[in-house]
Image 1 (spheres, rainbow over the protein chains, first blue to last red):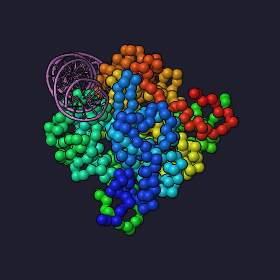
Image 2 (cartoon, rainbow over the protein chains, first blue to last red; image 1 turned 90 degrees about the horizontal axis):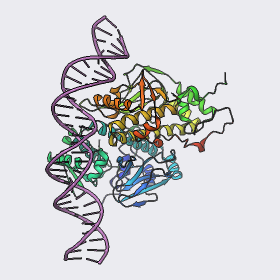
Image 3 (cartoon, rainbow over the protein chains, first blue to last red; image 1 turned 180 degrees about the horizontal axis):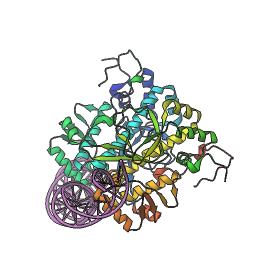
Image 4 (cartoon, rainbow over the protein chains, first blue to last red; image 1 turned 90 degrees about the vertical axis):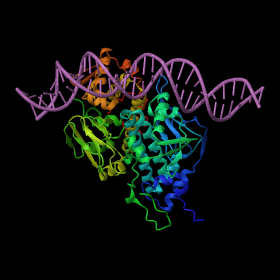
Length: 263
Length: 263
DNA sequence: CGTTTTATTGAATGACGTCAATCACTGTGG
DNA sequence: CCACAGTGATTGACGTCATTCAATAAAACG
């Protein structure tokens, strides 16, 4: 077997950050240290952080899916964001004193908990890593903007197919796809809360998506039949994910055995 | 006349930041330095930054209103955010290489342009100010999340009244209201692009809002008739604006002549 | 003062929501 | 092993909220 590269193949966090800039071996082991800090487990549907709380740690998804969500007073629920493996919840969590929404587990979930002290120690010693974390955080708010586009301007069909595209590409950037397949644990109820549609309408629209032969979902695995067609149907443009290694000017010059990066 | 306090009354930027923490006199003059850096003027509807560009400065609204927006390929436009006097466009603008949306002037507009060098110099010397800027930035993304709630879960009536509440409270936090009145230059077309509704439906719904006696708008000035009722009608909860001086533990202890702060 | 933008109104259509019933699947405990 | 409850997906019928298309009126603009 090949020499174990400390980076990509297994760790979605590292894989994802290297879509921004190439990290040095030291950066990577620092990232892995964050990644494995004080793992905490949750069952599906449990809350990780609740509205009104004062969060005291930076959290990072080790395994499983989570989401941000919020209720209106009359009980309507809206999902505001998805956290996939390797995603960070809130880099700047120490600035605000009070959560204005919930973070909950979508599936069984493991999250790292990084204290302020550790976070500052690590990022002070590894500015390139910090920069990559900023990139990740900004991409997060860009995704939030794209969700606004979704809810404000797209039809039900477009909203759902756009979500599928985004999930696939985000997982792909984290090295969690195989060919055109990836995990997909979202129920139609979740999709309804994400897209602002009723479950009934999601069910019907989803059938239309399948009938068009765009995707297939079975046993919580999604297989995309035609990625180009899916992108066209959803008016998808990947620029908001900023996956073009926009921080390549910061690349560590490591002459080592790293595999080639896509793009 | 009273001794000129260098802070609040005239400068919405300072006024707003002091909803987070009390700044020292030095912090304030540093902020004013940012505030007045290389002012640039735009006519209403001009673009400040265009999609695909590589932004090179941090921008800050000195006077007028601006917005983030984006088009879908087929021409549908969605407004993704509003910038009011004292608002900062993007603190972290140097990390990403390519804008994924536009920033445009809503009204005649004056913006400061802060170079990376100046920004780093000032914030390095004034960490409390930097912290307040982070707070502002996080509140910005919280506002974005609330807009997601708006588009995903609220009715047309609620979306419009919620927007009115938010604008009023944001202007109020920047010291730009008088009693229950404030500037309100948004056309119904803009409101439609913000709320994801058609102009026709905005017109009809807006009439309903007026007929209920909740607000009055005349000559680009909005007067709220009943703020409580407006908040109830729009399912508004101000917690996402984080105006409770959440950074008070960082307060500068200035024994000087500063007026009392609300809250 | 003409020209463009903005606001308003009516009528017809369509997208999506609500209500309610059914069915499949899962896990639980007796 | 089966009964049962709970969740998730599906379907039909119907209602409603919001869009579209037009036409017009009223402001704002250069």
